[in-house]
Amino acid sequence: MTEALTRTVDAYRRPPWNEAVSQALPPRLRVAGTPRWVGLAPLIALLALLAALSLRLSNTAFIDEALYINAGHDYLRHWLTGDGVEAYGDSFSGVPFVYPVLAAVLDTLGGLLLVRVFSLLCVLAATIFVYRALADLGYRSEGMLAAAVFALTGPVVFAGALATFDALVIAMLAGAFWTGVQKGWPSAVATGAILGLVPVMKYTGAIFIPVVLGVVFLTSPRWRAGVAGIIAAAIPAAAWLAWSAQIAAGIAFTTADRSALSPHSTEDLLAWMALDIGILILVALAGGLMLARRGKGHALLGLGLLGGGMALPAAQLILGEGVSFDKHMAYSALFLAPLAGYALAKLSRRTWKLLPVSVLLLAALLFGVSRSEAMFASWVSVQPVLNVMGDSPRPGIYISSATDSLKYHLRDRPEITWETTFSLYPQGEEAIRVAVEDQRFQSVILRSASTGAPDQDAGQAVLLQALRDSPHYKLTATMPAREHSETDMWLVFTKKETK
Image 1: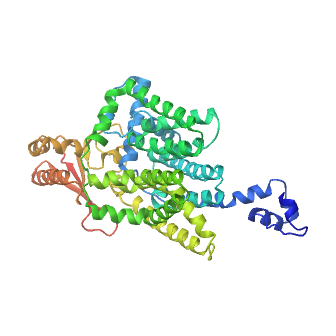
Image 2 (image 1 turned 30 degrees about the horizontal axis):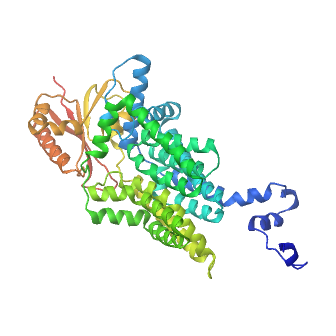
Image 3 (image 1 turned 90 degrees about the vertical axis):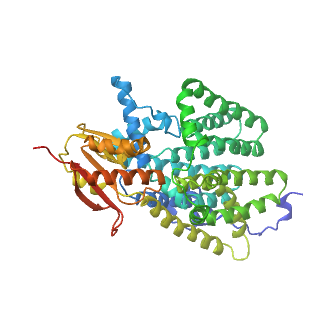
């Protein structure tokens, strides 16, 4: 018997909320597409909020931002003029002439702001992909809530304001989620191509490929996962054949043979995780348990997403590595968000309706605002140093613990040759003292605070003592590196002019 025969003539059907709102609008605003646009209003508002949260963050170039853009300019100059280029592959966590060159092109067109806006566009796209992937699977409400918890997470807001490859990789993974749940050959090929490019951008991104393929396997015809998997394996293999030496060195330094560059205790890292994604983890765990009750396939899906969400934090907890720990929580947010969205949608249908969901989203927003601002202030501004150096710095070799950032902001000063303390300190105490005795540097720019790495702190102590004991150098400027700080100071030593 059809539904029409079982429904009374005057039975009332409650319209979807977007249709109800559309009907309440003035007649001149009601057209055929009005309900659709009204339905997209929450997503549009969320994207605007995410953009505002990211654009409010401001600081001079972070060391990673400066390193990538400087390297990109070096590669462009090498390709255009044939000038030599540094072997960046040893220290990069992705193929060094892919994202850095893109960043350099954007920097040429619009400076650091444009490179950061590109990252913002990437996280906005990732938010849309999260929503569309779940909506196309029939979970529209879950998709909207998943997009919300993803976009409001502090590390995601931070990634949207940072000119590194992370935002692009997150967008690629989210895009692969979306194409992976579609139908047909083209989307399967697109999924494989996107996933294959992920480890080219970021080597550790390879650990997420099985997670996305698992989602494709569990949510669409299995042959699609096979096609995507073959293509996803072929692209990195081709990159390896072309640039194996650089890739091997980069993987060894940044991943396989890595030791902690900024050692932190497990307690510190867990505390950061709780602040960054603590609420998201708890809600995602609840969503995973709810999903598991629907059967084995759903349980495997939940486990895969939880595994993807905890992969990078677990690796850094084992290593005790504080570098990029906060930033990597953005990857966790991507994989935990669908589970959290599922849990919140279930919760919204219970007795109190949207009240607990609103409270959780508000808490996520407050943590997101606070944590993203703290992350963006985690590196000191080099602006005080730039102010001291003025418009006419003396030519010569400059060395600093913030070389990459200073080199980026002073890239129009060809008379300055930059070196970094990270290369000097490993040469040993005697080499440090000899460099000072030989008056190798025109200027030495350091911070009085700890670098966070014991080996670097030891080298800096030797360099500072050598500079203070040297008759050839004088301390020409001392400025607070952080506002109202008397212990974290910029120290500028300059070689005395010979008469």
